Length: 107
Image 1 (tube, rainbow, N blue to C red):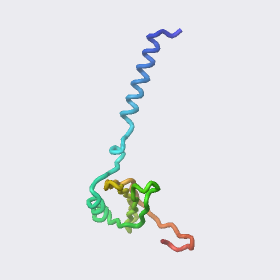
Image 2 (image 1 turned 180 degrees about the horizontal axis):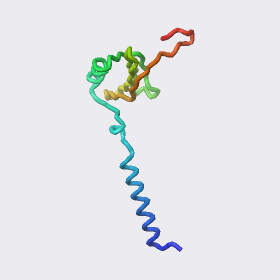
Image 3 (image 1 turned 135 degrees about the vertical axis):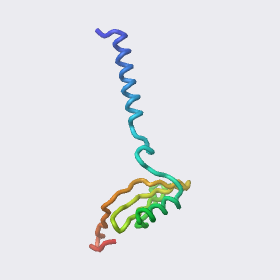
């Protein structure tokens, strides 16, 4: 039969595990999402990675524009700009390839 002391020890261990898990879970900043001045971010994409705008679209909420920037070497970046003016790099990668359109021609 478990005593009150056993329950308290189990509770303390569970709380410690939860605290360790919460502090070890990466937040947005740790995950590498960069936000900043739109002009500066786009200038860096152009100068450092030679990326230029390829596509854009409005979010379903209408509160953000998403843009895709691509270089001739295949690097790519997805940028989000909100209606409040905040601009963030949402994702980036390499090996970009154009998919054929319905008529078989590249876009």
